[in-house]
Length: 373
View 1 (cartoon, rainbow, N blue to C red):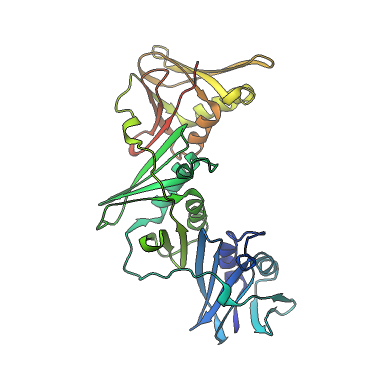
View 2 (tube, rainbow, N blue to C red):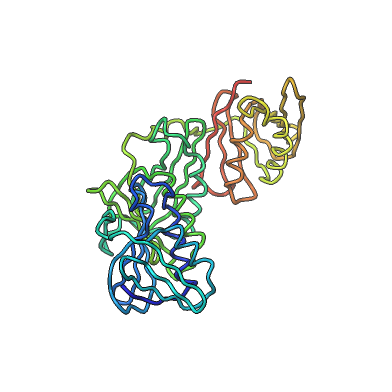
């Protein structure tokens, strides 16, 4: 194998595939990136057996071939050399790199040992979605997934495809986020469960890469229990989670007794003040006192050995007064993942979930379970 390419482009795409490579994998080959030079393209692949990435760049191919080389060290070397032409030649199982002033040689492993990563046909996608809409959906729901493996289904995001829309739903048992988006019409209804880590990696790709293509194509590989997201010249493939996601639709309230139209920044500022005490309280517990006549909300937290504090902000309140307790952390989480200045909070009583929405946007809903007062 022998090829030449631009350092900036090489580094950009090598960094993407290197992100999912473990520094201490169970199999040594998984610490490597797979390279294939073929017909004017340099194809790069990486996998940890749960998540895989494939991408390619244009290159001047002198000799076609396949090989694998250490991901982390190779990426670090390429990132630190000047932006100029990079020459690569594989000789005697060494991955030799040279520029005008720098050289390196990395040991390789045979490409035949690298796990097989599926390819798909261009026209077999389940649906296509605008990349900005997909990034928004991932940002608004992924934080609500569980971070431990006690219940594996809660570490995933449920994707519900139905005609001209798709919904993304995540819950860890204490909160639930749901975001619906328009898509290019799908020919079939499908539900599947994607590990949240896969969507977070996809969010990184969508956020960092500019492309003339504004859409992400989503392919369901049912025979392999995998999903593939294709954006421009990057494919991200993830296994799907087996299991039954909780039946959540019946717990989303359809009405309210108290409704507050709130400025997000005002709420966040009060939460920061309250959290000075609340972060020392078991469960980050704090109290919300909602006053309808005064059109304001009072936040307060008390810790016996430390003290207490409170913070008030004005908002438009409709309906009954309400006293309810929440985790300050859970409320901060949802507010930090909403990119709108105006939000709506709805609730009926102190033992029922609080509901957060975006004013004027019915596509998003977030539920937070209350704490005992």
